[in-house]
Length: 510
Image (cartoon, rainbow, N blue to C red; front, side, top):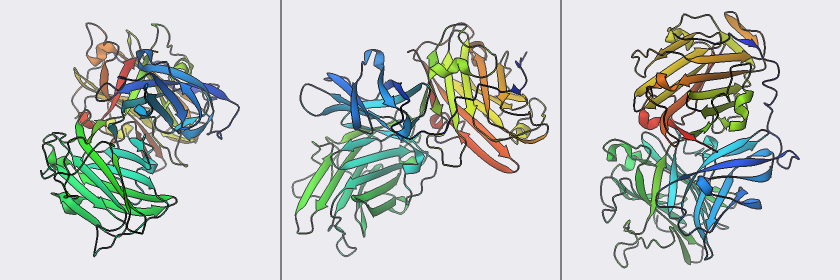
């Protein structure tokens, strides 16, 4: 049977740790746990040390990478800040690198999964389904994808597009013209979306795009009309945005684990006719034949690996997590914000994950100030979705599992697509910072939620999964306040039940 442990209770101290962001430089210093997620060719080959810093500035901390995880500090509370990791070898220069998403370092234990790759490999992060070319990816809160020379770039992918949003430092931006688009400062983006390095850029999956301030040139693009592009001057240089339609070029569409081939070339004119060229990767020659500066090959170009968002579930002891009030048992596992980059008026939502041989534990803390819910019949999914509610989607080798809970404890268990999921024993509880809504809305100081999904209910009857196993995953918060509805998923492309668009949950141990 399904067992619900404890109906909502008045929350006393369990929400006291939730606070607004502190300014950088606070005296509240702490350590940060970092988990390195290897991408592509061995990023640790030739590395003698890995150094960490906040946004590439300030104190430099050396990491102990035994087991691909480490902690470093002390670091000041505050944020948002990115953690930059630089892997260096015996010779000068960076050998490997990685960036965290923006972190608000405001109290408690923090951890970050950082995709770590060689310096000739960049990471394309799962991104939002819609991206405004004028706003770019800044508001999405994604990690950087590469930083080299004067270039800083974030690359994202969704079901339809690969988006490259870069800033280039330049003290004099020289415009090209529609009459002569090859004049002026130019950014070339060269992409083989299948990563097959099949020769010159002339296949249906290849793109060569040149961007200038006044005009752009589709050197090679089979779908010119679908290419999104912007070139915008800004303080200290310019911003170049390119959105490339890749879905139709890939038989199964984009997905985590897919590797593409990418080259970036910057042609910087100083206004007097001189041209300086900067390429990523630096040893990429680019041209197909001598003298043909507009034709590119992928030989020597960089790799671009598509990755999804990852939530690490920390291994804990058998009796480490109880079902008393609040979520104090989870606080040592580190918090991840549900939304990569919450807007100023959005609720602060933090998610925690843990596991042991009994099952998968998840917890959520919300500072929602208005709680709205009604008594619903179990199994009435459409009705529960009209309340403040939390939903989990977990997909593994045994299929998909979907669990929906509202604040009063009404539940709906099924499988993606609506098929039945005869769950056995699922333990969960809400604790509210105020009076329980009675078919109404009430002011509150937030709530916490925690749940145990036994492995047997996720198809692991014989034995639990192993350390390092991963699952397709999404956690969605539905906030229904007197007609206003906000849906916040963990997956950047969510809420979704499509496996390739889900986030990922990974079992790990400190």
